[in-house]
Length: 476
Image 1: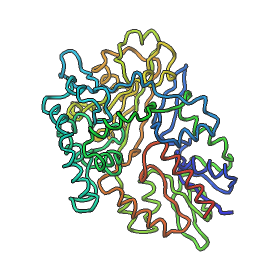
Image 2 (image 1 turned 45 degrees about the horizontal axis):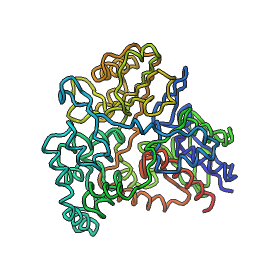
Image 3 (image 1 turned 90 degrees about the horizontal axis):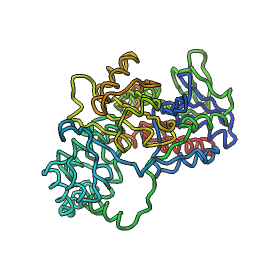
Image 4 (image 1 turned 180 degrees about the vertical axis):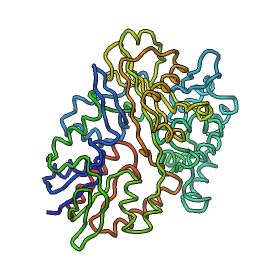
């Protein structure tokens, strides 16, 4: 039986360890540099509030997180987002007198409308943007030709930035006002750099098949595609996944507060060094943030130093929980929250990327009659914010939310989390970079690289990667 080291106790690393245990393989060690497992999956439970410190849900259409939850006996805990109230607002200061939050038109899939009449009736867009939306279907053959040329390698390259892709279809205004805040909310990055092939492959498929994205979405709607809630989570918080998997792992296999300093080849396999000891293993799984993976793997192959130089952005989350009395003094518009377009983000102080009306997205997250809000900061302002004291971050979030929602009362609970270098940027050419990284890793027998830097930042992808890697480890 192979002895295995798993370096990194985030969701992908824990999923690997869990699956090894489930399959009866016990000879492994899971190293985690911090005092807890789960990475950005962390839930704070207090006074009936369920406050997610990082990720708050998974995308329903990807099945792997749900399958895991059911397997762990958490099926009764599975909840769907309250999609009857699903509405996203954009903060457009000065667009409408006395109204800073403007709802996105109904029926949109990201920046693509299924109903052009809803676009025409929306105050969100100028006549220039409305005309771009109306004319996009008439350019279907143009877009198909472009997609075919790109697929055959006859265009300007097989990949393009998200900004370029959206501009080709809908122009500058939609790119800046809708695409930028939507993607920044997920990746915290620059859509002029993000890869369409890596970030939005579904939209590329729509372009190849239909040319027009509007026509593609309308055809899907007419076909009666099954509807399901967009997001799924757990009543008692996503940390339940980590707790359930950890319960299946032998306690002596988990080494917390033990960062790995180096990973090196040996005559018989691999040597993993920590501050306290060096241990021998047959196989090693690297499941750390990309900047840590780069330092560990660069000595094995100099090319990896450049290939793993993948930019990652940081994020700061500030949550406010309000009791019934304070909540009664607030009027929160119906919806899941709001996004801040790039043009509104440049203020005298670091501005919000987004905010979530948590109890309207998932009603189980707050006691009845109580409100729970989460504010997100990221992008270029995040590095400086990481060093701010909690009280200053709380004050910053309170000011920003009060500008949009009216003066916030004193919260019952406040929470701050800093997620340094947690959001890897899938820039143009990402898929080619990943292919080369994996070719090099494949030459290092017994070495595996997983985590969110290569194949997806969502929870289902992390679960899938971890469990599939475990299967590979014991079958090879």
